[in-house]
Each structure stands twice: as structure tokens, then as C-alpha cells.
Amino acid sequence: MDNMNFSSPERRQVHDVSEVNGFLSKMYSYMGLAVLVSAITAFLTMTVFRAAVMQMPTALMWIILIVPLGLSMGISFRATRNPVAGFVMLMILAVIYGFEFALLAGFYTGAQISTAFLSSAAVFGAMAIFGTFTKRDLNNLGSYMGAALIGLLVAMIVNIFLRNSVASFVFSIIGII
Image (tube, rainbow, N blue to C red):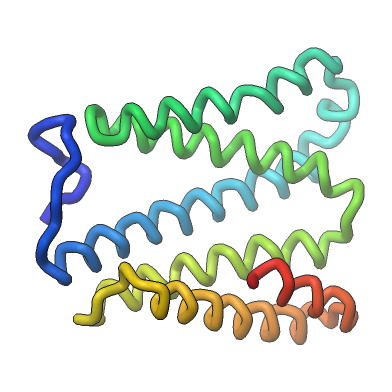
């Protein structure tokens, strides 16, 4: 079933658990990809394009901060009518968010930012894989709590490998909850 190819712009009702799981798996995959694109953009912004970013005019910074609002609305209106345009807008939004996160990098360590991105991408990826292979309904509170548990486990593993402080680990847990 192709969830991104609707015949009409109206919302579809799904009655089959496998259809819901397929749809949610695809959405988790898209979000995982968007988080990965944001992470790569943030990394490139702070390494390759750092000098150019530091010389950027303030007006352009304000535009970059406001554009995601319009893109978010555009995605919600376009996703069912033109899925390709919705996906392209999602990737543009991911790049802009990556750039914005790079600006925040001045306030946090690289390990903290890496932990946040890796944890988020891993949770979306795990939920996409889980949704692909399970027959259970993923559209309930228990499934979202399971995603939070996956996030906690990923945060613990990432914090161990990055040798983050206990405070970073505690903030990771708070952020996931």
C-alpha cells in the first residue's frame, strides 16, 4: 500500500491494523530521515561553513528563524494533495532546522548535540522497523511509551559511548519523557 498516493485530498479512514502500522512505519522512516538530514546539516554548518555563518547578516538569521513556520503549514496543507511537494518541504525544513541547531551549538557541547540527534534518529528508526514487522496496533499510548523506552535505552547507550556526565544523562532522560 502506498500511503503517499491519495486519490483525493480528503483524509482517508483506515480500518486495518496493518494499514495503520504501515502508515506509521513510513512516517517514522520519513522523520528519521529528516532528523538525519538535520544532523548532517548542523555538522556541515559548524565545520565547513562556520566562517560564512559567523558573518551572516542579522536580517537573514531572522528570516531563517521564521521560514519554518510557513514550511510547517505548507507541509500540513500539501502532504495529502501533493506528496512529493510535501516531502521536499519536509527535507527543506530539516535542513533549516539543522542550520538552527548548529547556531545553538555555541551553547552546548558536540557530545550533547550528537546525543540528541542520535537518540532521536534511533527512536524513529526503531519505531519504523518495529511497525514494519509487528501485527499490533501502534496507534495507542502503550506504543508511544514503548518508543519512549527505546529512546531511554538509546540515550543510555549513547551517553556511555560518548562518556557524558551524569547530568547529561539525566537531561537526556528528562528530554525523552
